Length: 380
Length: 129
Image (cartoon, rainbow over all chains, first blue to last red; front, side, top):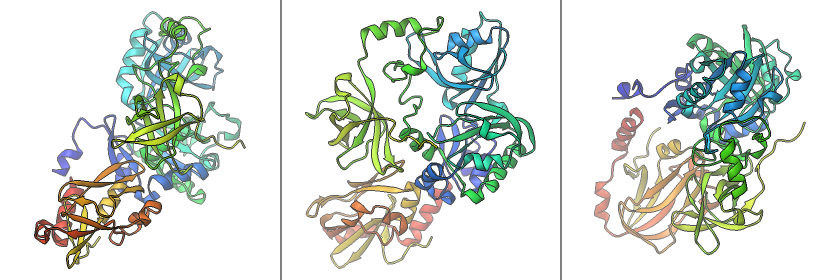
């Protein structure tokens, strides 16, 4: 029955799917995609994680989606559907932002790239592709701009780690040292002209994301060339397992966990990416009210001080054992060698050093509120 | 991977080696491979009663939590405490990294377990799914 299951039409595959399988990756279904979770040939999640923190690792993130807005009113459209201030972007610059519901909760978080005059690219999450595209299209009809779903046009490869720039520089004519964090450029990569190269990522480490044509032959050629060029730097292929532990250490939100349609911007502590002073945007009015009312829950970092691992959706207890919140993401931290988690708790229990408990298999295990991000990369 | 014929196996991917009235229990190589990097092993105390088919502990990898089910009934007579500080030993050699020693309640329960050859067949089917 394996053949039938492998080709089930409901599970989507990236153009690199066959390569992952050839490499012996453990595959899982993630948001409707058949994706590698870890590669035994890379040494598994911990080895992949450490490679990104200390060297370089590559990820197939082609399941991410892309929406392009082009037209004289593209900026106005982006401003209206996203919470950050896109008018501050120079051509070649990107910013973290989010699409919000009128309630001030999250449709998705996005990276907004200003490609040109009246030309923006939103990079969105895999699980919310269709929803995001419909949301952006339907809510920008009043603006003179064309909204296109380019999600299937690109194979997106993330090259992440302190040695990422050394690796990628071998494969491109673009001067990478001139590309600052959260900026992008276009250049020839592996012989392919005009490839978008962003100094972005989801690991908390320096790194790049490249967008190449999604046909299988091109995708596989680029993936293999990146691996080959990275050999001298000890590059490894990394799966979604390491991607999750890396982003958790860096406190980068994951849709459906730290942010969702029931969590607002203030609760998620994403204030600095939400520009209330810009012109009206979807969610703004509700956020103004919510700010005045104050939050009922807030996102904190937890470190387990007792013996036990916090996991997604575990309950958070106060020291008396009363349920006061829940863990959004919890895991062992491969770099810090501690058990960490992000959790929603009432603001009065959010102060650094507050002793709490996480319920692990019916037992309260001691935890403490700690500063976040858990990991911050050293400044070069 | 060859599964040693000196012991028996369960469909929950544990191995059991019997020596007289005592059994030694661990998880199989297939189990450690599926779990990935093992970071936490939670085992019962010496003296606890465990019964066949019931959960007796937990093993956690970076990405997953997996319950351990007792292959046979009995009283825990020994616990491999070194796994509390070095759980990665299970990844290195699952068939040498025992977890529990049990004083068997009823040796007949062993008859219900799989031989090495049958377990290997079972694992091949699991992997093909």
